[in-house]
Length: 123
Image (tube, rainbow, N blue to C red; front, side):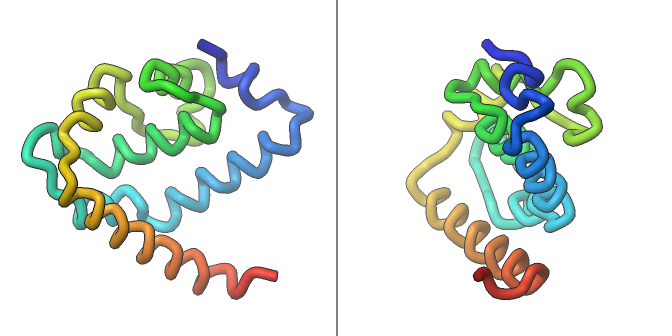
């Protein structure tokens, strides 16, 4: 597993853009949006925080559930005020059913609409 410093070297242009994206996602109320829209039968508490943990791990170059642990080390609390352990994320992901895909579609549509209105049209 890579550390956050290895995933985002200080000189990497991705480091700044990923940090800006995470900050933008926090400001877009994504966690609250996921909590309101997603209803899991099991392990559904704090779904928004768990979703941000997965998104942050992906942005840091993670490609497995174990890679979410990188967000719990060092100074990442400046970007993520709450993260969840890999075992918690695994249980949460296993709780997904087919009907939850539609709920996540609704989350992505609303998120894109908010980002679109906040930043204007692309291009």
